[in-house]
Length: 147
Image 1 (cartoon, rainbow, N blue to C red):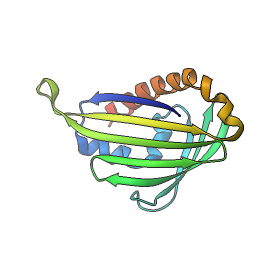
Image 2: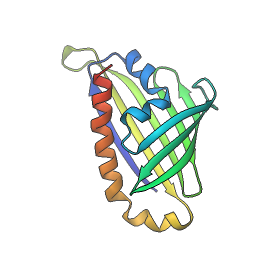
Image 3: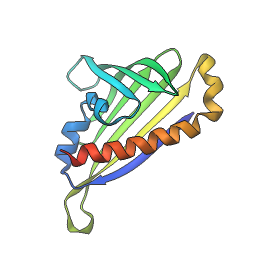
Image 4: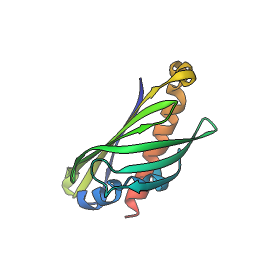
């Protein structure tokens, strides 16, 4: 199983950051692989379903994410499925009062379990996933700083 994980710190309140990131449609703004994310059902809590269209390694793919866990104000976890991959995305939001300023630390972790023919890519997926993680970190920092 491959994964990417990044932690960023921004000078925004945890409430501002949570309000933005707990709606997974925000991935359209900051996730470099996402083309669109549309909420199909639910209110953002467990069981909410999002339809995501992404590009990875030049290929466009559709994936359906379901919210599987929410700790309001702190954590959201989603599981995405299609025939090629199971993706588990976890976003954690925590107060970060470093250097005497009120801010927020955000940890984004995405785990990928490849299936079928895509499983053959597992040994070499680390390199493009690292770039995806680096680009997501940059884009997410910029998006949160614009709040």
